[in-house]
Image: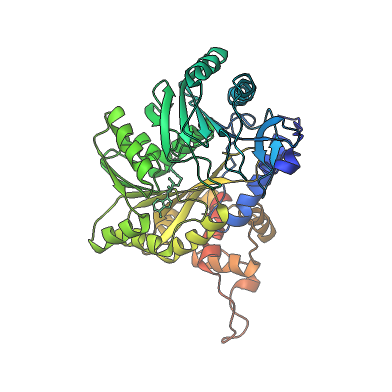
Length: 474
Ligand code: SAH
């Protein structure tokens, strides 16, 4: 997409930070960010673009209020405030959802229903939430009200569903608290079944008003396919799916695993996950409602084993105790899904210190127009002597390959570009010598017997080995 689509409220809303860039520019911005933060662990694959960079959000929320002159408005809160920025359309939200919200606003007037006033606690409509199941086309509308009383509710729902036959269910959610949370805890189904069903990688998922569900449908499938690939399942593995939400990742790969243990803190999500397993006839999953760190610590203390651990923590990342417990369980592979490369980098350091190596790193553009970067990383357990494999490889090398001679500057430039890391010629020579490769005269020995040279640290050593492989020197 070569054009930039202007958003008139970008500054006030603050939800999207990159709308002034073309989509290609956004992708290269995110690639650079990923390389800068994660390049020191392994080569960062080219970011996978979103099939739909605009209007991808399947969950749309609008706040309702009135202007001083009494005009009813709906839109988003100005960043950091409770002032509503009036919007009828948004560059990243599903267009059907936006149109439904405008219709609700118009119907309020026709039905003489007042909007809620945050200061007085009086009035009726607070928010409208629309969720679209893109795999099936089902649409849920949640009317969040300040009171349970809903005058002419049947006529209102009829009018709304006649204007939008695509709506499959309407729910009233009652939120009478002084809170910035959108949804309250009480709900009444006004029309349809009270949930929608989506399809992800051939599995069906019930989504109720309060369920967590990924907001970008198309990219979620791409992300999960990557998780599946990195998990490397053969049908018999014991897999832990930690920070599991409604169990989507675990369920998507359950056919390829022996057993999946799904761990999630939110009780509503766990309940949804159990229903989803029934819906799909999945019998090899267990659902644990617990803090992931506590559960993993208990598993480690009980000397349990896992073959693959999948983890998808919130933006704050995981905990040192969780990572320590995972390393005690000694899975062959860990797949880390992250929506925050900063906390991901922090956590990867802990994995590396405890016997794991980052093998692959794949950014995926889950949130076009925003500066968020989603990444899937595959970690593998290090074999005790990481050079054994290379020595065998060297013996089996075809000579023409080992005769390749890139200059030190070429190797440095490659490493800088691919990993965002600077290495010195000295370090390159140390690694080459360790692998039995020819080094230049000036690197052959330390100048004096007792000269202390800085030694190439293990993370850079690994990157240099990757670069030497790239140049077919090993
Ligand atoms: N893997 C899921 C959800 C990822 S969002 C998916 O792809 O849809 C992160 C999830 O972690 C949320 O569902 C949140 O409720 C859960 N979570 C947050 N802190 C947790 C903790 N300490 N232990 C277990 N789960 C937690």
